[in-house]
Image 1 (cartoon, rainbow, N blue to C red):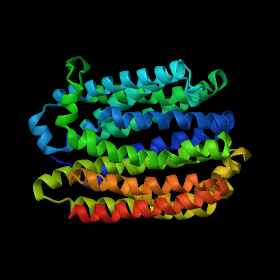
Image 2 (image 1 turned 90 degrees about the horizontal axis):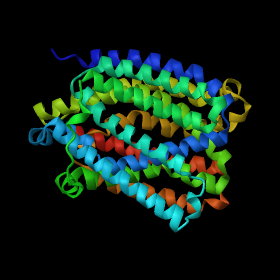
Image 3 (image 1 turned 60 degrees about the vertical axis):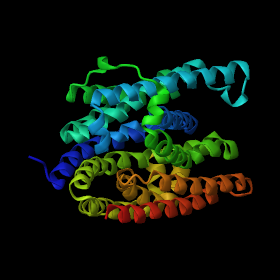
Image 4 (image 1 turned 180 degrees about the vertical axis):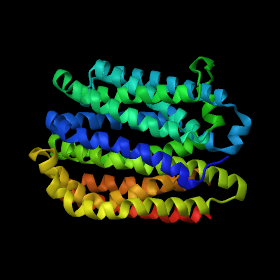
Length: 408
């Protein structure tokens, strides 16, 4: 018997709440053990994997929610194509890295040692595999597994980052993230009895053409979207130094806690509900409205309190060195609120196959952000943050409006 929306959300929310407590307890300690520069390195590591993951996955994992694709391919056939595509790109990324660093000697790659690159590739594989397994958990309605996984992953990341803080400095932060991915992949694989051994290599070119709607259009829009999100991470150290990036990165890390736990919990339920509703009724307006109401209900009051208090709480809870991070979060709070609500609901773009519109939106915003940073040398750091807030508010507001229209 299918569970109700409230039941599914309750199951995920309970685990999410427990998972939230762990980083809330550990973050003040971690904030004192690591410097802004070390958090800047972690941010660059995660951002690099995020961008490479979009390209190397071809976003084929999203085809698991496409009824037409599921009729034509089994899970194992999709897994073989997904893995082949990932391996193909990982090899090519490594070849490009070696050529640029050791032969062309590109200066900006100087700080990235081969060990750093190896960790990036390892993180890439675990990230992509996790992105494929998570939809299978959602489709099977194993929300208890997802809830438990959040707790275990959160505990693993925090434990490793705390345990290695005095041994390997910034590597402790990076290895903590990788350890969390390993635990998550193990839990998902065990829950659905997934076998990695059934992998059969496929032609990357054929995969690209067979899944062009995902490998070309959705990958392009996702890549531009992530570049928009990561633009401050790549521009800030050049313009204002690694310390400014560290302040921004630590603030965003704190915001990612409720986003990854609560917003993504609703997204998991919404993906399953909206996919089923779309097949049965040709629309998903019922699940859209329920999800929107749930997102607003759990976020409106906390965000109001957050926006007025975070600037004063930050230095007391996390240490005086993070005072600027509190100011950044305050200035970005309207955009972060809209992102919290919009991120789960924009899945409608995939259901309605509106990837081209998604790409056009992201390109427009990307051009605007690029102009902002190129002209930003004469603008102060916090003024840049204020303008970013305005741009992101316009983007997420547009996504929310269009998502509602496409749900009908």
